[in-house]
Image (tube, rainbow, N blue to C red):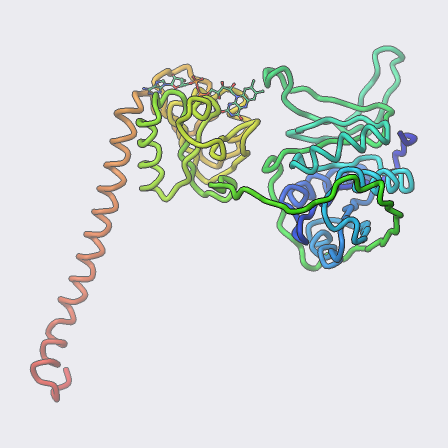
Length: 375
Ligand SMILES: Cc1cc2nc3c(=O)[nH]c(=O)nc-3n(C[C@H](O)[C@H](O)[C@H](O)COP(=O)(O)OP(=O)(O)OC[C@H]3O[C@@H](n4cnc5c(N)ncnc54)[C@H](O)[C@@H]3O)c2cc1C
């Protein structure tokens, strides 16, 4: 635990693997930037690894004023103990007021270890972060400019705001895709602070022999259009409707957790609090009730179409277009309409080409039958 330091910086753990920065810390930079601006302090990224110095520029372009860079061959591969030791030492030296981590596999492993070693508080899986004041009931003391760590609680039935009055730094993890990725500003300038922290062999209890990564079957975050099916689709066979609609729109197929638990589609396709957070241009929710945990992952979509036979389904509260009806009738009609439209467009294009050829025909006919005659 460090003393409450209201002048302390805001930090983001700049997670990298094999010299590549992960998306989540970059997404976090925009929120961290606005927190730092509200507090009037610097935003720093904390970058650990070996021969990763060139990533510092990218972190500055994404909003960091400063990058703390710790390079060591022993930090070449992520290990809990060595990374935690370095960050705890940096926390004790520089006394930041806020430290943020992506809720990635490494972030979820590292942040609690640091919280325990530094005796600081930590809120996992935040969906929003704000700066605000809080008056304690007991002594009516006003605590200014605290980090409000906002996340679903009690199975997602309430949204809780968690504060940490004095066990500083205030720390939180934020799930992938929750914060929008900022646009890099290549004109930004920043400072690189190189730190040397001694790492001993006992800080590396594991010997990493080999690394295997299972590639994700679908990249929902990158999809422009998503067609998601829920338990209302009824069966894995009937889920073919979702694949068909997705195919004719060039969309990614996705699902609610209930549909995944029922085995309709693979878990990589799950949208929601414990799945992927998406914000596509168009999200079509088919046979999905719209539980708060599902909405947590899709309500930021630019346009939402919901198809449900229950007019009171909560999904309609966030939908821009509501189709109340049986998905088994609505979806095939949509597929037919889209296919007919593309056939009509193809015909229209073919007719336009024919018309152009018809206009050129006398000339080309003349040219071929009278090769020396110019029209
Ligand atoms: C800690 C926690 C985390 C969770 N994380 C997630 C998460 O990440 N993502 C997620 O999705 N859920 C998550 N859940 C589960 C969530 O609470 C819901 O149970 C789940 O989203 C429900 O899925 P669903 O809407 O497909 O199913 P249901 O709630 O069963 O809804 C099915 C819908 O289909 C409609 N329907 C039925 N037949 C038809 C038909 N023929 N035509 C049209 N409509 C029809 C029904 O009216 C109903 O609205 C989580 C829960 C907890 C406790």
